[in-house]
Image 1 (cartoon, rainbow, N blue to C red):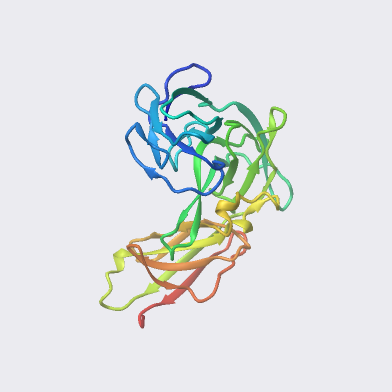
Image 2: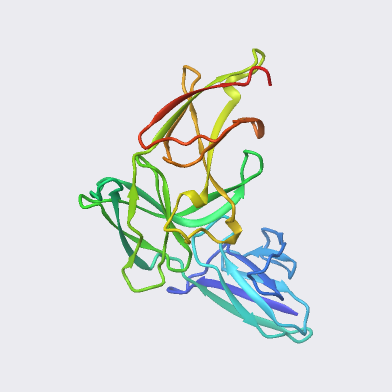
Length: 308
């Protein structure tokens, strides 16, 4: 049996090319492993891509119900992902199916950023919005949280911001340039405009790492990264990213100066940080103890790896 799928913009009817399409006998929320292929036709074992006309075909066994899903390819979020229940096909049957997807932000949200110490509004603070995703980190294969970006905003003189977000995805806001990083869930399912949590931020912290390496080392190839548990940065409590990102961390790279010192800016304050030194995708060493910095503090640390 064959399913002929056409994926279109729900608002305009325009075709959506390069959308990922796949079929599943189980719930699409279950863990699956598909062959990801660039062709627009395949089987129920494949995740195919729509052609320029938004069309794709899948050959599926007859006699059983299916979930048909369409959405962006992994690690993209240009449009929503949607799944439809498809009743069983008869042997040899060809069935056409159209799936309309939302492609544009559709919900206004507002919020505030204030100074944690006294509640005074903070102007000119940059905020990044996106959907959470997790990937293995270079630093030892741990899971790293990444935001698939969808919008950005700046606070006004009253510390307020307004932003248009897609209600069809789980949205988070990240603030961390010039202030101690925070991550907050933005619920876009209620009344409009939706209210983002008020972000009470402190001054960010800095860290300078002076590495002592073996004389034979290529010092320019060594990088230093800092990590913090996502749960330590999310406000309010209980709004952590979904289970797929359970136990994940957020990662910051250091910049190596002409003097050879590896410098971090805008690190979170009062948060345990773990450090790793790397070359390529190999971890040279992990710092023995976690480091916690006070708001506004910049600390210099000597890290001796000469005997490693």
